[in-house]
Image 1 (cartoon, rainbow, N blue to C red):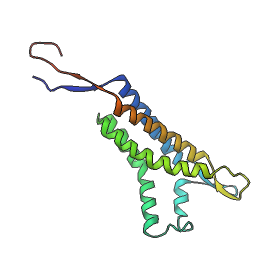
Image 2 (image 1 turned 90 degrees about the horizontal axis):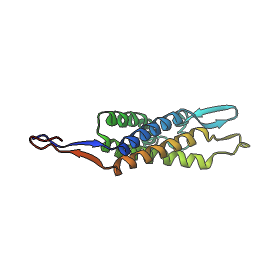
Image 3 (image 1 turned 180 degrees about the vertical axis):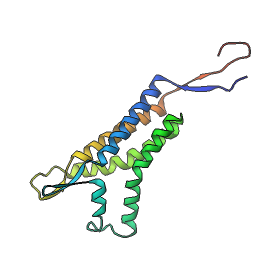
Image 4 (image 1 turned 30 degrees about the horizontal axis):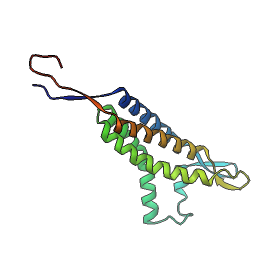
Length: 159
């Protein structure tokens, strides 16, 4: 007798695809401009290099930097987990990714948009990252709520 195999439904596969698109979009958004200073724009990673000016030097600054820089490898791990068919585990990690990236991006997006200021937050990077995080979370929720088809074979019968 064979073990039952769980095959994802079309809804589960669509959720995984949506999640991957969201992860890629969110990661691309972290490399887009987040801060504008005169005519110079900086990515989220370049902004992290200025964390000493924001009072985030020391241990707290290193924690923030470590978490933010770790988002890209986390996104890659999620995609790999989906490819190797560990969909539910990947979906839970995407929920973690989306919560962190989406919260930071939403906070930056609502603070941005003041074009008259000499130094300000640009909305390109934060809005792109937020959109990707929302897509990723939507895909993860779709995967987690999709039912799997289970095929059980009986001796001498078709599965």
